[in-house]
Every structure is written in structure tokens, then in C-alpha cells.
Amino acid sequence: MLRTTLHAVLAGMLVTSAPAAMTLESGVRMGGREMHAAFEDVQPFLQSGSAVFKRGNHEIIFGVVVSPEGHLLTKASELGAIEDLKVVIGDRIYEQPVLLAVDPQWDVALVKVSGVGLQPVDLGRTEDLERGEWLVANGATTRRYRRVQVGMVAASPREVKPNGGAVLGIVFKEDGGLVVSAVSEGSGAEKAGIQEGDKLLAIDGRDVAKREEVLEILEDKRVGQSLAVRVERDGGPVELKVVLAGRTQVFGEEETRNDHMSGDFSMRRTGFPRIMQHDIIGNSRFMGGPVLDLDGRCVGMNIARFSRCETYAIPALELQQLVRSLMDEAQRKANAGA
Image 1 (spheres, rainbow, N blue to C red):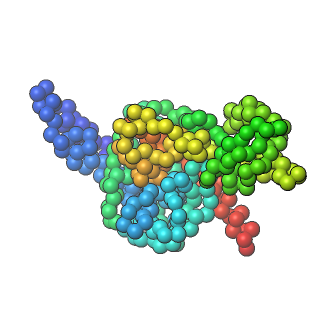
Image 2: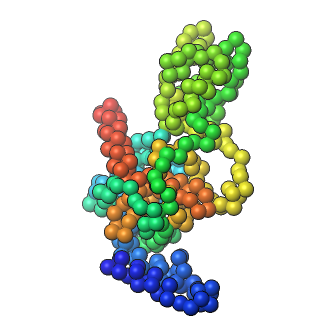
């Protein structure tokens, strides 16, 4: 039904004279009413399978429903403090969501609401999509309605390395070795407990004494990887685990001319093991939600608004794996706390 309706709309757009094509009515353009109406058969899947995280009346981020019991996946770095958030699924509001687990490599969080009988998305289509294939994602929302936003697959799946590479999140000086002179706020180094004045001894089992040795170790590492770091503090060794972040996440980056033209893009937009790129219009608040094919199957989760014409999504195969790994992590934490 959807494919037939869509073909009819496209045919109506093409059957026009040359002068009319130059003054195409807004109702039949890519973002117009008729074009969106052609995708309305997918809207119920979007309505039941997506979540909207809100702080007060402000939408913060979207999410993907992955279990009937209220488990959701979303973009971790955009959540902020979860205690004051509420979640809208379908037309119901859920208070007091709980953060269960986070995968820093993918920037994905597993959140739980007290739902029963929810309709999770169908992650069964795991093969790579063809370029040019139609997709649907969340657009503007109200409590009772998720407006479809449409676009196409724009590129083949690929890894997107972090701008500037992966970093520990420290600044050091060479003073008879590598001495930490500053620790970046929110970095893996800060969370691991590295302190100013610590002397760096080893990373990932390799002794280090020069800046070049640190850079060589980090060269092929990914964001989200956990490395063993040994430092000297108060005359003795201290063993720590540091989760790597992207350089631009920790130290920021100089915005390019294209960035200034792109509008609202994601705080973290690089450093993903594998992404699907599409051209659905959106902004950073549209991330975290499902990307659907014409049959309503979830083929990915939006993870980063990269620029004015590029959005990155985690493919369904990797989402399946993330659901399993984050559920397992949440269960381990629950068992440890029991």
C-alpha cells in the first residue's frame, strides 16, 4: 500500500511541464504535505517504537523502544541529568526513567521506564541498505503524534573515526618523564582518577617516557576502549582504567565554515565503529530515535547530526548487539547490587 501510494505521488510530481517544474507547489516538494502523506502507513510504527525524552516541555532527545517491559536505547551524550526527565511513548507519559548502562564507544545508553506491553521496534532487517532507498524517522512531535520525516540512504556503511583521534584527556609535560599538568573535565582520565602531578609510567602494558610513545599507542585505538594506565603517585605505582574519548569531545574543536552553515549539529558526531549515512533533515534533538524502512522495520538508530545534509545512524545489526550487551551489563550490575 505504502509503495503504491508513494509511486503515485512521485509520478504526480514528474508529470508536469518544464515551466511548472520550476515553480513546484510546496505541497508536492520533498518536505511537503503530499510527500509526507505518502509515508503515513509507516507512522504507526514510528508512534509505537519511538520515545521522546523531555525536560519540562522541552524535547531533549529521542529513543528506540527495544522491549515490551520499557527498555529504551538513546544517545548517551545528549541525555544530561536523567533524574528530571520524563519519557513519552505512544501517547503515554512515563516518569522517573532509570539509566541502566552506557556503551561509550557507540555513545548509546540503555534506559528503563516502568512500561508494560510496549511495542518494540523490529530489528530483523540487518543487511546493508541500498543507496537511494527511502527511509523514515521522527520529525516534530506532539504528545499524541510523531510526524514522519523522510529521506534516503546517502552512502554505504563505514567507520567514522574521531576527529583528532582518541585521547586519555590529560595534558602532560616532559619533566624527567611524563608528568600530568592538567586533567580535562569529563574526560576518561578524570573519571578514572588521574590527578595533576601523577607521573605516567605505562599505557596498555607498554612503558612510556616520551610524548611520541603515548601518541603511538593511541594511534589505532577507538573511542570507548578501556586502557590500563599505570602512574606514579606519592612514590608508589597506581593502576587505573581509562575509557578513551574523542579529542574533539574533550578539548573541543575549531568550527569550520561548513559548521557555521550547518545549524544545530550533535556534540559528538564522530568516532563510531560503523554508521549508515542518510539525508533526513533534523537536528541534534532528533537523534536517538529509530530509522525505519517502508515496511516499518527499524534499520537503524540516529546517533549523530553531522552537518546540514548528513545524519549518521547505527545499523540494525549493531543495534541488536548493543541491546544484548547493554542488557547483560545491566543484569550484572543488578546482580552485584542484590
